[in-house]
Length: 328
Image 1: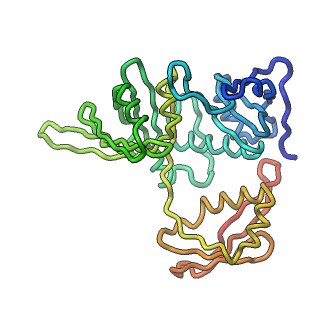
Image 2: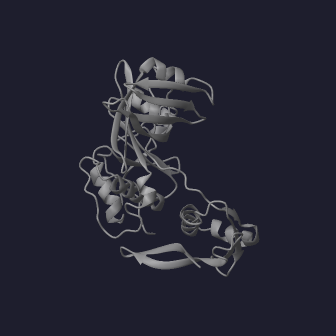
């Protein structure tokens, strides 16, 4: 086992579950494994005092200083909103999540107190990262405020919306859209099922009456909005636009995929491959069995005509590591 779950002693913090207070007494406060990678621990040290790990109801839970183990509340005065940072099945998944946070912080480059790594890690400051948008949200007695940052435009904001107006938007039906303005900037806000879509036009006005600016489209989870409305601290959310993908026809390789589903490590590597590869919009990729856990594939476009999705085994920071790569 790569990582061991080691409970704290009597000094561990008690978890909170407002949905099931009695069950919360069974939550076990854990130490973050010292076998985590250096990049994972970089996030843990950065979040020191605001990030805690528990074992609860068969899951691993990472929460903040509120120690909330489950999502609860609806934002009312007698039921404030709260939720954990992360819930997962294994410490390996937690390590990957922490490393992803480190990559996101590095890509933004302006997180207070965060020292950017300038190694040769693949993907740093790539065009894809340029499109990531960090939205920072806060509120006071009268207003909900947000500002945005991306590497192309820098920091923009603040955009103010009346607090009561935000409640109206959050309680509206799915698909409802409204328009807001603040100091010459404009936003279209659309209520989706579990999120709000913000289409913001940041505008500048020159002395001769000309207007210039740019548009940002950001989708923010509803739970983050509630936290910003009922939390004294600012809430941040990194929006990563979805990447155009080819259509994947995996039916000829169904037996191989069923084998992959039996192993959490290989399934995780395969899921990352499906996320990171085949960003070929308008194409169709067909996967075929190619021995073991690897695949042969063809494309409808013929560019490339064929190739392989190959599982590799290696070592990362002294531990076994498996990953897929595309060969054409």
